[in-house]
Length: 194
Image (tube, rainbow, N blue to C red; front, top):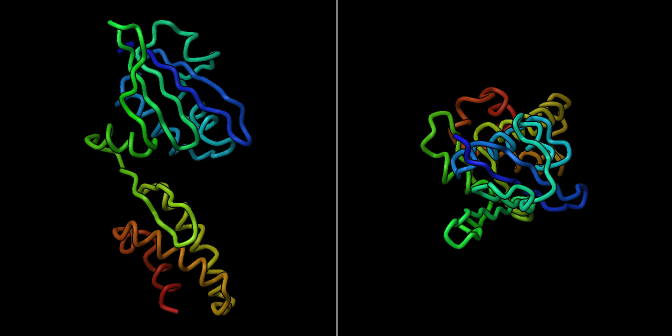
């Protein structure tokens, strides 16, 4: 379906502002699929703007939202914050229909898709909350477990950094309790029963 849209990524500390154009599937569910691909992209270098291009083969650079006068939707991402606008052909303006974070946008529009894994907030005591789903959290669990197992093997489980890494692992597993019994079960048991 030719529902054209532009996807603008605002300037960040490390990346210039950039806008992409995709000729089809720009409606909310299609755009959510593009954002979902972006979030799941394994190569995280360069942040969301680069991940979007890597994850969506049909994305092409353009100058701005207004470069394409035939678009039905405009999406603007500032870090994780998304503003989604729909073209009102009567008034010939773009009207905001979503303002929030990109993870909630994906959850809202893709929740009925069979293969979709919804995002959840993971809260830490002294850090900002982050969003993960059952796929992205596995990378974090792997990171924690790999370090904890090295320290465990060397009998170095009485350090502050071990406790900190263990607290991260527990936060991840609290947010995704289903993984406790299905993902790296023996490793989790070994480091949490010290």
